[in-house]
Amino acid sequence: MKPNIKDLESRVLSVLEDIEHNDNPVRDVLAELWQYNQEQWQRVEQMVRVSDAYQDMMMKREKTLGERFDKHIRQLEKITRISDRYQTALREANLELEHASLMDTLTGLPNRRKMLRTLKREYDHRRQHIKLGMIDIDYFKRINDAHGHLVGDEVLIAVGHLIEQTVGDLGHVARWGGEEFLVVFTHKNADDVEICVNNLVREIQEARFDVLDGQIIQTSISIGLSHYQEGDTIDSLLTRADDALYDAKNSGRNRFHISHK
Amino acid sequence: MNDLKIEATQSTPLIETDAGRGIIYMEGDSYPENSFEYYSDLVAWVDQYLKEQTRPLSLELTLLYLNTSSIKVMMDIFDELEEAHHAGREVTVNWHYDLDNERVAELAEEFKEDCSFAFNIIGQE
Image 1: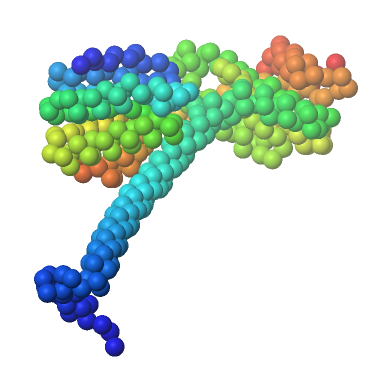
Image 2: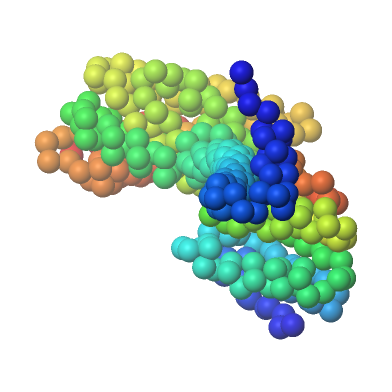
């Protein structure tokens, strides 16, 4: 049976307070034991208080750390998200710029820079198949002078488009500059390429370009063709195509000339 | 308190503070080598202003590209503004962007998400 501690305490206190027991030899021992007991109780209570305070402090600390941790996680996720978006935007902007830097804005054809890359790639991988067609629109200045630059631009676009269509899978076309276009033929068969070059001259000559205000423009092109020969560099291939173009111009235009040097 | 006036470079934005009017201006790209060091003066300025002054604070931002550590610095500043706002302070962020560059607005929206103070994203011609 559980002792009734309150009852026991009050009995001890009443014995100690009763002067009748003052001479009893057990009284002093009981008083000492009572005092000791009281001190022990106080110590236990103090320990409980300190221990509770520690627990309270640790719980608060854990809560603060947890909140800080959650905040950092949230921040980190957000930083990552924003940073990713910046990177995506930069990457897209880069691609747009790269595309813009390699395209001729007027004709939509690859530009000279892009063509030089293509040329280098083809030269590195299969130079023995390379044939270069340097194309120039005949008397283009006259079109500009007679009809204005807007019409000239329309003609450039139309001629570029027709060249691209005619060349098809036989090679790559680029606007080389001004009224010049360059074709890198990578097709192995030289006869097919010559047929294509011949077709180019004929197609352009036969074309009726319907430009601004319903005006019909007719024009022609001259082409200089060079084939890869042992020891050729990209520059020497270009120079020979240029020379052949010059020959085609000098022998009456509206034709192609093959470099045989 | 001393105001800041830091000129823009290719990789760092213009930073100007005006304690008298309670305004911070930032304009440009931000990808310094060490963003935390670079922005330490600004962070200290915001800290001091919010502590010592009682006037409102407004950030006028025209920021384009921010690298990751600059994003962290801006978020820390916005967190501080958020705290001040909860304590009853009037704080505002006006994030200006070029209407041709909608991406900047989308990014500003991300920053705005956790802010309960006035955060305006303003497109300009």
